[in-house]
Structures are given as C-alpha cells and as structure tokens.
Length: 134
Image (cartoon, rainbow, N blue to C red; front, side):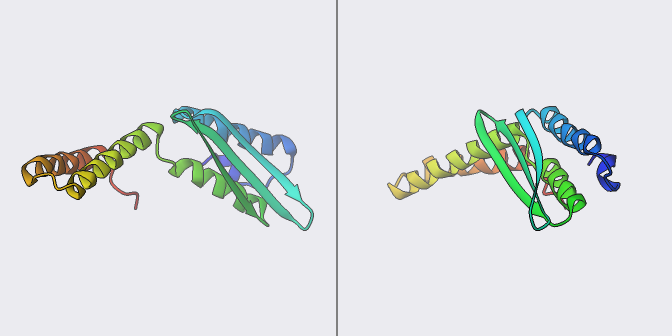
C-alpha cells in the first residue's frame, strides 16, 4: 500500500499520485492496461474502480465507501491480494484437469486410468498453488 494512503488527503494532486501508484503496482504484477479511478457522488459516497487485463481477459472491480481514506485502502488491499496472471493460469489448468477426471469417472473409465491423473493433479496442486495468505 502506498504510504500516501495512510495520510489525510488535501489535494487532487495527492489523489492522482495514489491512483498512479495503483496502476504501477498492477503493471509490476504483470497486469496490462491498468486503470484506477475515484469519483464522488452526491450524498457523500466515494466510488472507486480498478480495471486491468489478466491473461487477455478484462477484469474490473467497483468499490465504494463514505470515507475516501477507507476506499483508497480497500482499493490498495484489493490490488495487493490479487493472484498473479500466472497463478490464475495455473489454477485454470488444475480446474480443467479436475473436470477431465470427473468426466472420466462419469463415463466409467477404469481406475487404472483415473488414479494416475488424480495423483498428478494432487502433486501439481501442492507444487503450483501458493500457501494461503493468513
């Protein structure tokens, strides 16, 4: 999280600096065409949008708060906790493998065909997926 997020904003320039930092953080994590924006609505609500491409797919997250600092911190946390595009590709691969195994079981493939796939999937998931953030 950029240090400026934890201070009280006084200028539009400071807000722009934080939003630019969010885009740099996304780019540094291999996301492409990142955008970060904040707008204010009547009634005191602040809205934020973070968008980017990951593995060629457009992703977008809308957030809101009645406190600008809270919104910026939420946007920063969202960016920080995103899985990398590489991690998403690996998770999709494992899901495809899992679906393939389930289809094999559904059509009655023999255990000697399915079990090696299950073992491979287990080893891959242990080595590919990162430990949960705690």
